[in-house]
Picture 1 (spheres, rainbow, N blue to C red):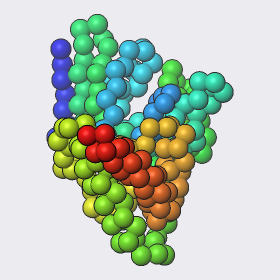
Picture 2: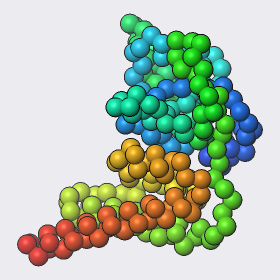
Picture 3: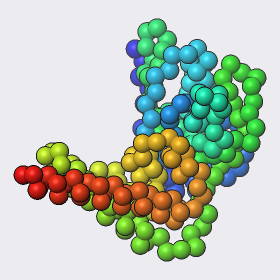
Picture 4: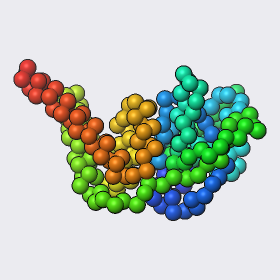
Length: 228
């Protein structure tokens, strides 16, 4: 059993974007059903197909990056916008299978696919949110307060202590990614948030969903109190 760890991760997303030029790049692609990866989010994977074992072996000798795309098994189509994943830990099993831990890095758009290897590759361009033309502080504060309310109500309903996550970001961009990757359960909704290129819009969508969730939990909490 061989375990390789990369102690450079995790990294702040805004810092990473400044380090990597915003240009086109050839990136190995890994379409996955029901998986939408956001920058900063962890993604553990079990690699058993020979083509993806080859992919991991190749990129481990380089930048350790590959692209994750949401795959629709019904249409056999993959989304064109995804996130790059960096391998930060790789465990090789005796039979050749791999357990890898990855972390989302940057969003990208596939310009064209390349099929000259056993695994899919694509020419991609990196995506960044547009510069904010609105004050992000009010909606950021609203989202943070909603998260705390949801955790408090969840703790009350389950009679279990639910703490605010230590990795909860406070800056708008990374908070919008964290909420989308952590508190959304429907891949199609997550994909829509991933494709937005406006931090304010992403946070606004999330604030609406979190408000509905808070009201739902508050109603159940009140019912629990009434029943005793």
